[in-house]
Length: 611
Image (cartoon, rainbow, N blue to C red):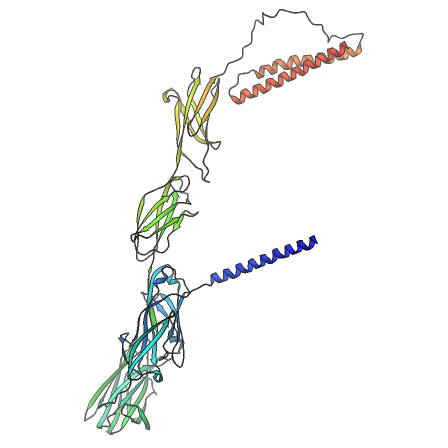
């Protein structure tokens, strides 16, 4: 039963350990991949033409931008790479599906730094979603805000043509709306030439359309001249792309019927540089035509195409430009500066942990920092401005600096170092010399720190009044414990020294003259001579055992006679210090004990003889 219980306990502990490890693994993975949606406020929501001008009246077939400005400053300094916000697009609009329009970057003020990346999921029927994901550029910045614009066109079937239309988008779960008037085609009045163009999706080309003689006029010797300008400066007509059709059109200019395709041989001539052409239409007797062609086009540029129809009766010009409607955006934010406090000891430069600092801004904001084991403390991201830094609590064993320092945080951010050195707390150890009897010459006092010679000494004599002090001593050691200071005196010949007191109140070192023991050469006259004791060590011829015992006793007596005076002499040599005095007393005790043992041996021998 007991073995079963032990197995259950071990198995349960193992299962709990595995569960804890698994939980730790999941928590770590979640933390490492954690990103969060950002609370974004929409400040401005509009439709813009291709020149990024806000418009509230738009031709239904136009290409335009759905634009807005956003503000993520509510996140403060907490934005991290991977944080994002989502936008649901209006279903009255259609958004390009080519890769260039689906994925684009939002750039910083320098035009090259990527602030965020946008991904569009368009719905072919209209609408879609956008996710804007921040890069690490936002980290450490505050007041992050920017703009985004999306290339778009209208879904005609979902419009209130020639009327007001409410357009809605949802950003970060909040609905934003605006109104725009969308107008359709109007009846064309007295037109003999018109043209327009647009960039081709997924191709470095542009397509152009020219409408000729919509009025149905009689034109003698009609001729069209066309040229390209601006753009990259190297854009040209695409050979073989020209198609001329005789058509019938309605009042609004829509082609209702293609009558025939016209052979351009002998009619079209292109300049050698490929940037202009002439089209000979001969005499027109009310016929209408449509000319289409393509040119090369460099995205991001504006390519202008101008044409003019000349005839004997009248002339008319028309021009158009192609500009890519690439989606894009921008972002900006204040790179909050940080104040880095560097705390060290003034005497040896060691980094000091545990110092507490108060950082205050001119706006009244305040924060408290404590230095770590490396002696540093770093504020969070701070807005540009003036701050004060003051040490409110020094590390144990050190004196607080207490000085208030003014620090300027620049608009370009960065870390501003503030170096603060602390002086260690110090103590003094006073020493007084006292003589019992006549004073000897100068004496040397040595300082001990935690029982170890600290390498400091004082010389006391009559000129110092036999007083002195060890000053400027560190109160605490490197590991933080309070140092125990004591003093010791170099030995003074003929004197015994005694140390009393403590480091706080001071030490007193008392020297007392040592008395030298002297022998009396005349002996002790007060002790009368007594009878000579019998010589128990003399051999007895009649008793061999006694003879052997007597020999043993004589040897012991001889050793005692040699040992006792010598040992006593050594023991009574004047001591030069407490240690020497103790050693002398120990030697004396040992000598007396040895002598007693010898006498006992001698007495026992005598007793044994008497017995």
